[in-house]
Length: 301
Image 1 (tube, rainbow, N blue to C red):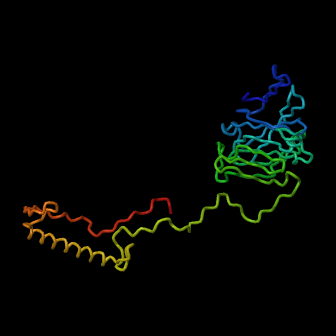
Image 2: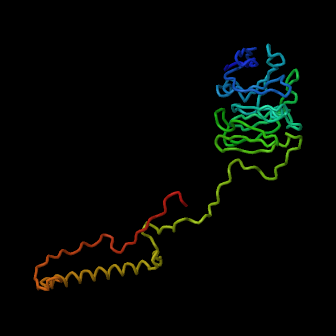
Image 3: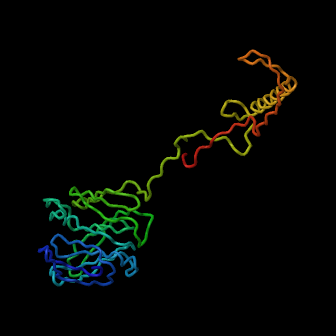
């Protein structure tokens, strides 16, 4: 059943039969639909008609199913967006009838609104009060775009919705997670007027956090004469210490060479021993006196 509205008789679970199969224009992949409260009209989502380019914008199909054996195609509603439609629900009808496991509510949400999860254009709220007219009258009265930076007939954005009996509406977003909304029209209340221009993107984190590591010294060799190392010494002082240390080492080498015929006393036997010692001058370190440090790993600032 990919291109028809198919109605089954499931009263006898061991003998399920087809009551009717109904075609509609531009069918590509009949995905999902929902009944009005009186169960005479069904709104249908075709998931691939927009994706395949069969229709120019998001399209919701309307069929009268008063006669289950002979449903009547009544028309369609063209949305203003090009996105794919996926799941729609008339949540007032759900809670008025107790469908889906909850008990029927005495004061259910208004059943004249359909909540459509239309992928990249988010959730779209349709006023379907006139959907049963001879020429169906449907209009969009609200929306919440979970992907304001994407306009596409592809699989981004909102996948589905669920309205709690309280009227709070959960909307899934594939890229950005779950959104909890309060559609005030669900209980006949006027919409709230926004006080701030909504931001289409999440607010970025502040950039003034302290860095977890000290800022490394310049590596281009252009440090100023007064710049100090991490040890509290100036560059000139470090160079001077390196020169003096090198001179002391050289003088020590000459002293050992001059007295290499030295006699030593063995610590255990107490006997005098003499010997000839070969001395190889120590190799001077290539970067004697240099101070090295580790720069902070990238991406941690």
